[in-house]
Length: 254
Length: 223
Image (cartoon, rainbow over all chains, first blue to last red; front, side):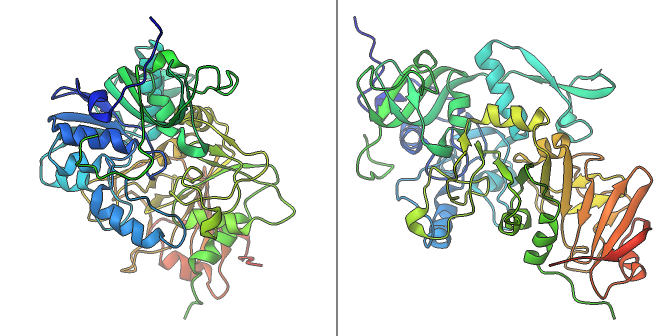
């Protein structure tokens, strides 16, 4: 039987995500690299006690509205940008392993508010160790040493060991249950290419979970993607689902 | 009465004087981002942004050229540039943590005389954000911290000990503020440049940590 990882709907793609799942969610902090429709499908499914892993815990609908107003002159913020803040606002998240949970100003992200209200647990970690911990999981590396974080809050509870006279921390691999990522094009094998700066945590998280689900703009015939240009080889990806051509509200089944 | 303080653009202009031809430079969000506007035409600088983009052009200025898939770490659309490369986060931090960044410019809340940096929690906030700043602070070959010399309430930000949570110990090489340029040396802080109208005594009065005055202390060149 021919290999075909293309799934017909977002709801089908996330159907087996259970309560308590660990979800690496790709993207960085803008709309163009965010797996919005996968996040929306998880919100519709209503699973709870999730651990989200990623750069930010999301801006959430309110801050996205503010960004839309502020950036309108320069960057069109699409109406179908749904980030992990949606899951936090809906009370579906119990923990975040994040680099950038707090807004860089005197406003609060949904995750920040949830921390302040005692509703979620935060494991704060810099982007480098976050990315490397997932790369380690993907590559079968149990743990690694890095000097980054020594003498700071990041050191708490971690083994410290000296190499060449410099202290290093032992950072453990971070494996997810379902990686939710965004890419540009895919074929039925799950091979992925990306556009511009949208690889970020998406390509890093591909293969770092038991199941990786990719949200893409377009599916092309096998052979149409130049092997020289494929960024994520298909075996890291279990499911591919195509974004709608027109923006779709997050709370309608699709 | 001391002179005027520099505004953010002028501080960025001074920071950009640290750029050497061919350098790989990462700019943090805030004032550091402004530095890319002041690269002298005779120098070619390769800007790295931790979301996975290297060698990009200036920040996009009109909506027609703005692309949601071509952004910097401040989520600002940037212009493409010949020679630009893109990559994922793991590669981006191999680049940063492997010591391949010549110069990082980060905003700061507090710096000590040892070059300890605090910049990941805003005052009054319970939750902080490292982003890529901690990696840059630990691993860039040279680190410039840029900030106003005092808080809005007029309190010193160059201290004997940090009062805010530490981002990285002994990482800052040069502090550029709105009144001075101060080098962090093995023998403590060395006042190298004063903004026009400011004396070494004026600057020390707004600095908790002890400053040594460089024998060749000069007025900050801003043109």
